[in-house]
Length: 139
Image 1 (cartoon, rainbow, N blue to C red):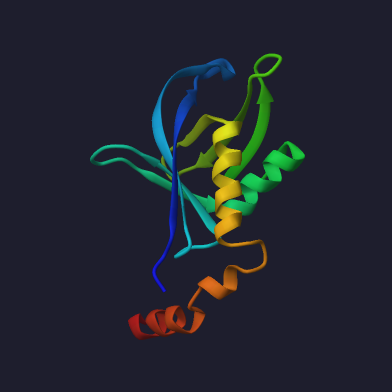
Image 2: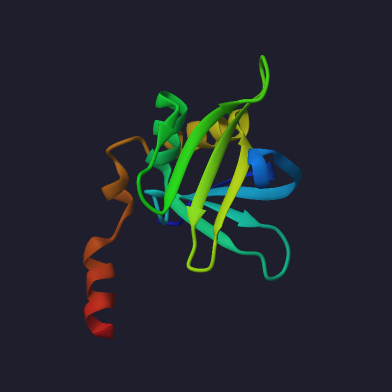
């Protein structure tokens, strides 16, 4: 079975000192059935970095306002009456990066992701035996 992918271009604004949102740039949120548990935030262009994290983390943040305890944390922040952004912070080996993303864009991507792979059906899209054989073969 070939993998289906959903991509949403998002305006990502880095969080500057003082918690202000800096000027932004476009990035992509990606979801693929080949990795049904994860969402990737990717910089565009050559040499752009990627950050993968659990799609359930985004779902929990949109539902509860905050999610994550480890290297990736997500929470909502109100900028004005209707301007709510989702803040995503990731602790990398050399620094911590933090982006503000449109909640509408994130909600759209999640709706499409859960349409492709409903909650609880992720294992149907994962070849655990194949991945285990690959890991053991490399050891």
